[in-house]
Structures are given as C-alpha cells and as structure tokens.
Image (cartoon, rainbow, N blue to C red; front, side):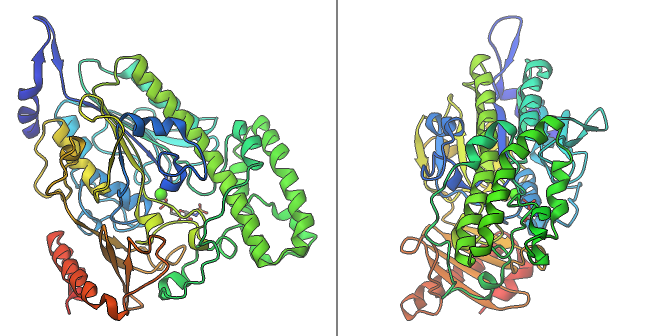
Amino acid sequence: MRYLICALLPILLFSCKEKAVDQRPNILFIMSDDHAYQAISAYDTSLTQTPNIDRIATDGIKFTNACVTNSICAPSRAVILTGKHSHLNGKIDNRFPFDTTQVTFPQILQEAGYQTAMFGKLHFGNNPKGFDQFRILDDQGSYYAPDFFTAHEGKINIKGYTTDLITDMTIDWLENDRDETKPFLLMYLHKAPHREWFPAPRHQAEFTSKTFKEPETLFDTFETRGTAARTAEMNLVKHMNYAGDSKIYPEVMDALGIPEYMKWDKSAFQKEYNRMTEEERASWDKHYQPINEEFKKAYPNMNETDLMHWRYQRYMQDYFGCIAAVDEGVGRVLDYLDNNDLDDNTIVVYTSDQGFYLGEHGWFDKRFAYNESFKTPLLIKWPNVIKSGITNTQMVQNLDFAQTFLEAAGITPPKDMQGESLLPLFKGQSEGFRDAVYYHYYEYPSIHMVKRHYATVTEEYKLIHFYNDVDEWELYDRKKDPKEMNNVYDKADYADIVKDMKKKLIEIQKHYKDFERLKYSQP
Ligand code: SGN
Ligand code: CA
C-alpha cells in the first residue's frame, strides 16, 4: 500500500470524462537462459541471424557493456528480482534456497496496481511472490513435454516443445487474461538455449547441416592465466557429455570399445528423448542417426584436435538450433504488441541470465568474470521514450533492472536496492553513471569447478582475485586485449594500474557492503 499512493497519483490521467487511463508503461521482460551476446546478430553476425531479437535493437537501445554480478542462473535471477548483490539477497549460488522474505520488484509493482505474470524458467521455488498468474518450469525444466508449477492449477505437464509453449502462454495471457485498465509486468523467460541443447523438430534439418566459424581461442593453452582457468572443467572435448550434449548415443559406441567416461551420461540423453512423442522421436532419429553413423566411422581415426573441431560444430548446431525457436517466439510476441496498440508504451527488454562460452578458450558454460560469461546481451525498446537505433557503452548490470522498472512506473525504489536506474541512459544522459562494477562468483566446488572469485571491472581494466583454495590475482587490459589472453598482473608496466584497481576494489566492496570479502582485499 505504501507504494500505491506515490505511484498512482501523478499518473492517473483522464483521457475522457468517464474513463481513467493509467499512463504507466507496460513492462515485457524477455530473458533467455545462457544466451551469449555472440549469438545475437545485433551484436555479432558471424555465427547466426536473430532477425526478431534484433528488432528490439533497431527500434531501441543496444547496450554493449551490459554485465552480470554473478554469472550463474538462479543467483542472477535473484539479483534481477531484488536489485541487490548476491551477498545481500542471500542467493549466492544455484544450491542455496531463495530467501522469500526478500522484497522483489514484481511485488512492489503488483502492490502499486500492476497486473503481473511470469511464464517459463525461474529456477527456484514453485510459488514466486508478486505474480497474479504464473507457469514456471520445474527447476531447469525440459525441452520436450515440460512440467510447470502454476498459480491456480498445481503442477501440470504439457506436451510440446518448451520454447513454443512458453511463447504460446505469453501470447495467450496477453490475449485473454490482460486487464486493459492496468499496466502489466510480463516476464517471458525461456529455458533455451540452456544445456543440453535439444532443437525443435522444424529446426533439426537446417541446423544439423550447418558449419560454424571457430573462435580464435578454441585451442587456448592458458599460458599467462592462473590455476582457475586451467582447472575449470568446461572443455568441449574433455568435459562435454557425448550422449546428453553431442547426441552421440552410447549404444552405437559399445562395439568400438569407447572408454567408459563417454558412456556415463546415457540417461542425460534419454531423459529428453523419452519425453518426446512418437512423431518428435521420428524427426529426431531421422536427423541424428546419420550423425551417429558418421561419427562411428570417423572416430577411430580422430585425434584430440579433430575431436575438438567436430565437437565444436556439434555443439554450435544444437545451441543455435534452440535459439532459432527463441527468435521466432520473440517475433510472435513483438507482433502481438504491434498489432494490438501495445507497442509505444511498453518497455521491452531482451536479455540473458548471463553470457556463455561458445568455444572461446575451448569452453562451454559460464561462471567466470571473463568477458563471454561476465557480459550479457541487453536490448531495450520503449518507443515513447527511447529513440531508435541507439548504442550505449556504459557498464550497466542485471542489478539495475529493479530500480529502472520501479522508476519507470513512478515508484521510489526501496533504499536498500543497489542498482542504478537506466532511465537517464534511455534519454541519452550518461553523465554521472557508475564507472566500475563489482562481481562475485561463489559456486565452488561444484560442477565445472570454477574457483571462487571476485572482481572489479571498468571499461579499461579488470582486476580479479581467485580465493578459497587459491590466492591468485589477474589483471586484464580490456582495450588492448579484449580476448583476455594476457594476464598482466605481474607486469612492471601495469604496477600503477594494479595499485589503482585495488583501491577501486576496496571502495566498491565498501559501497556494495561486501564486508566479508573486503578483508581479503585490504593490502
Ligand atoms: C546443469 C548443467 C551445467 C550448468 C548448470 C547450471 N549440466 O547442471 O552445465 O552449469 O546446470 O546452469 S546439465 O548436464 O544438467 O545440463 S544454470 O544456467 O542453471 O546456472
Ligand atoms: Ca543460465
């Protein structure tokens, strides 16, 4: 109630004598899971085309330096909802439960008269607060015939392809459940393109026959990097599963005497395959059995380098096959807004819960403060306010959404939120915006074995401290070395920069109240 008065008074305008029109903007928040900015053609055309997602950039603003505070799924979502860093909202990794006493921006918007709905992947709990309507996937969810926790029908199973189902629910809600007297917050949250990448039948023929450009750092040997990069378990040859990830079925390999480690993940493949209908399975077999046959013939003569080339292509084919359905879904939802006069006063956001490695450094997955996982795509349009085709280079973060949306709705955000509103940037006013961000990753030891670390990052430099079972610092010159191949922490030329960045780190840890870590940063 406390937000209601301040939110409603200034913005209830009367368009005619009888009917009050609420002028507050609608918010359509579109987020995919693990969608790398390199995989959106508004950022990079060398790998794929995403014409529908690109429409948001064409009609609005593209952020080229957007990043996350903690590059992993559930923590990123907790940061988005609470507007607070992980050390304050408590969701430091995928394993810790979300603290449901935390105030989230959807709760505040709902209390202030917004109609709220969430469809797709949240990744924690089964009853998100602040939503009139929701259907959220059970944990990570499945690509085929997923289970959803719902607001009013308990847990349900729906046959079909997850990306399309989430899109259908989103459009169905706009069409049938929307209350036209209220502005809405609609969170449209894809599971795709999260591991293990299972494309829809209609994209299998096209994508299984595509060849993708390799990244320059595919065979990185980590010469100047520390223990964390060398011991991470994210390598495409060594750490990807054959069945679940590359869709090479263990049965085929038995006769070849393939080592056991390639077979352990049979269930990872089967758990999706078994959810498919007969028709879906027939399509799958038609497109993937020939790949198995070819691999079976080629494998005996393949060395590790050949395997890297082959597994990279296999990975990209399925990853981009999944993105094709996301792009189509985004197009359908944008068309709905256009065709129903909802376009001009709706803030449409496209982002991902973090970035992702597409073979850079030989890796998949995320977690590191290095660019591919630290940065995330961010495209926003709002025709009433944002001019079309703008590019912004400020260091914005997922931490900023809550305050941005609240301020756009005319609500003063709670004092303990830690982001910065992006509204001035929407209007081209960048002066006074933050010049450095703070990063902190915690989930170790765990899958992929990325060591704990925290970092401060400016447009020019990145200082990282890996801690817990190591004590190693790294510094990157972001302008001279955008691929982050050279750790210059110990280089004499950079001694002054290291000193400055350490000072900055202490300031930023104080600013964001990460007092627990601060003691490790003091000289
Ligand atoms: C699963 C994936 C991991 C991934 C985590 C977290 N393995 O465990 O590769 O890092 O999720 O991802 S899988 O074989 O089960 O797909 S996150 O996006 O949810 O944080
Ligand atoms: Ca994710």
